[in-house]
Length: 84
Image (cartoon, rainbow, N blue to C red; front, top):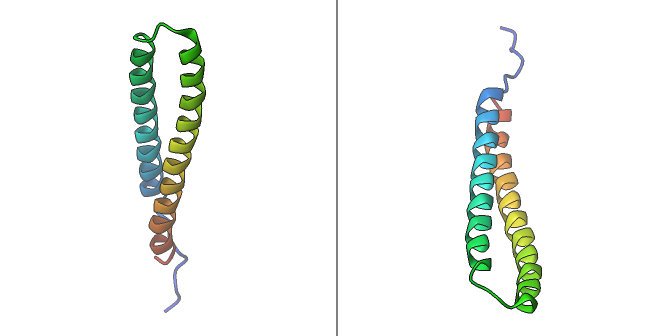
């Protein structure tokens, strides 16, 4: 009996990746909404510039960590699927 070629479940992969991107977008919108509401309560412009610089660093670090975890989860999902 001849062995069939391997089948890769692209629909499952797309579902997983889109789910991760959806969560990333939702968290980013929530983070910006909270920080925008925080900016409305601050009157001193010097504090605002320092806060913006700190927020940029925080956003980059958080999104980098989230993207790294998403990539590792995708890899863990793809490795067993590649053996099908």
